[in-house]
Amino acid sequence: VNATPLKDRWKTCVLARPFGHAPAFRAAELEARAIRDREQLVTPRWSFRTFPQRGGRTAAYDTGDTTIFVPLFAGVDDGVTELVAAVCTIGDAMEQRIASLFETHEPTLALALDRLGTEELYRLSGRVLRMIHDTAHDRGLRAGPQVNPGDGTLSLERQDTVVALAGGARCGVSITSSGMLRPEKSLSFLVPLGPELEEDQVFGRCQYCPAREQCPVR
Ligand code: SF4
Image 1 (cartoon, protein in one colour):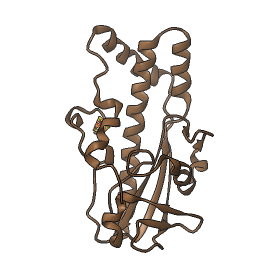
Image 2: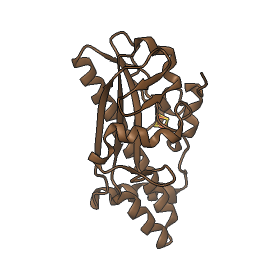
Image 3: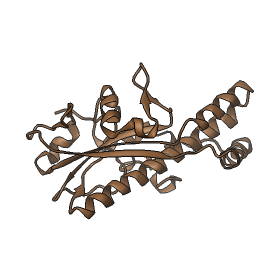
C-alpha cells in the first residue's frame, strides 16, 4: 500500500512560508484583515456524515453508494468501525474580492487576502475536526488520522466522492469539471473512527510542520 508519509505533507501548506517582511507586506496583511471584517467576507459552513465500516481489512470502505480506498488507513484498518466524510468552506465572497483586487492592480493586497482566506479555512477545518472528535467521544469512539484528497494519502480523483459522502450540497460545496472544489476556499477530508484507535488531535498536514509553533491557526 503506497501513501506519502505524513512527515512530507507539510510542504504543501502556503502558511508555512512567510508572506514577506517589508513594510508593504505588513500593511497589506493589516488591510486584508480590515477588509475581511468590514465586508464580512467569511461565511463558515460545513457538513459531515458517518458511515459504518463494511469493508474487510483492505483499507477499502463500503459506504453503501460507493467503496473508497484509503491507503493511509491500512495501518489502523482492523480497528476502524466507522468512516466520517467531512467538507467545510468559508464561502465565495473572499475569492470574489481577491479577483477584484487583481483587476484593480493591487496584487500584494490580493495575495494577503488570499493567504488570510486560507488561514480562515484551515482554522475552520480544525474546528470541524474537533466537532467530529466530540461527537465520536460521546459514542465511546476515537478518531484516527485525518486525510484530504490530493494530500498524498488519498487520490485527488476521490474528491467528488468525499464531497458527495460528506453532503457537500448541504453547505454549498460542489466540484468543478477539473475536480477542484467550489467555492475555492473549501476542504474535504476523511476520518476513521473506532473504539481503540490512537487519537490524532492535530490536522494531518500540521503534524510534521516546522512552522507549527508560529502558525496563526494552530
Ligand atoms: S501548522 Fe498546519 S496550517 Fe499551520 S503552517 Fe503548518 S501545515 Fe500550515
